[in-house]
Image (cartoon, rainbow, N blue to C red; front, side, top):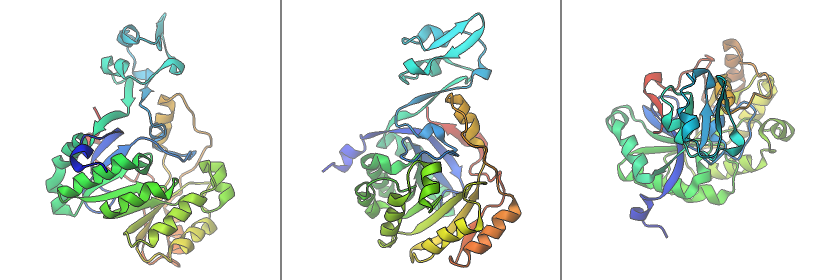
Length: 324
């Protein structure tokens, strides 16, 4: 069994630490984003989180053609030919040397190896705000549970400092990854996007059965739950879709409340920086539609919290920053 001391040296892959978050659980929080996800949601707003390994985000419109990345890349991945800038992802190993040389932000590394101690040092910077607001630390992703051993040590280390800890998860993994975390969790925020298996296969890449089974099992443990649904226009914004979800989760006694979150396009620029494009032109439900869906959900769930603004803000931009 790993000791706590050894656990603090355990390393995982983090792609962002976001301070002053106000929608990832109660109070003022720091959200720690871990890389790796077993779902493939077409609308993912953190596409850089899907792969476990570090990746380069290329914003070539910011490039000034200095050539420093070309000179330092040992794998011939960066090119500058007659003023034309290009990046060959096929040979990139994600070492991050090019991003370290880029002072304009045209190249960024998404994903850094951090020890448990490194992360705890970061999150403790805002400890006073957690104490005064009833906040704490939320581990998100990707899906943080995929780095289960690392996450367990993070939870233990945070709780040693008396911090409230939460996990934001989609549940698509073996139960054996989640179970060891439960004694060290104060809250689980669980995403339920679709309950129709055909729609789930089409838009998420699996039928959703394992996620829903894990949610049902989690609900029997007594661990406090917040369940959240991102409402995607053209996918799950029909009244019957939300009613199916609400009917299913309304039976869970440990459910604190149900959140409805409108789709946004913040992931589109990230997709472009990864050399990808969105597969479907999804739409954002308007305020009236979000409120109407919340009314439907309230027929089955005691407390529903819709966020009707498509520009729903989760942090103060000036202090959101990537891990360096």
